[in-house]
Image (cartoon, rainbow, N blue to C red; front, side, top):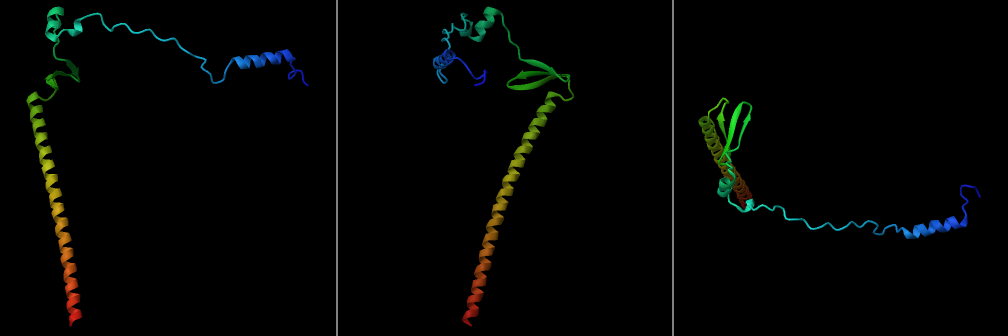
Length: 146
């Protein structure tokens, strides 16, 4: 035996004892349970309605505003409205939106009409093919009779 592989017998026994004390797939990590959380807020302000909070705290929320690219925008009724700056007026923007909506509706109507016309064309094509087939059958039948 080489000296690196040779170990005294009592050292081998210690190794096997250590191996038996440390399970390979056992539950070696068990964290402590976390304590229950305290209440989120001790304040009762969240139970007050907006008008009461404004009176109590003097909070007056205005409409959100921001400036982008030299234009001042204000958020009202679910839409961003141009306040100042920029090249177009608010009336022009509204007019263009209305025109865009009209053109979209017209486009949808025209698409519907195209679909109807294509259906009519396919129906008449199928009918003409059936008539041609019947005509050919009648011709062959009259030839056989003669």
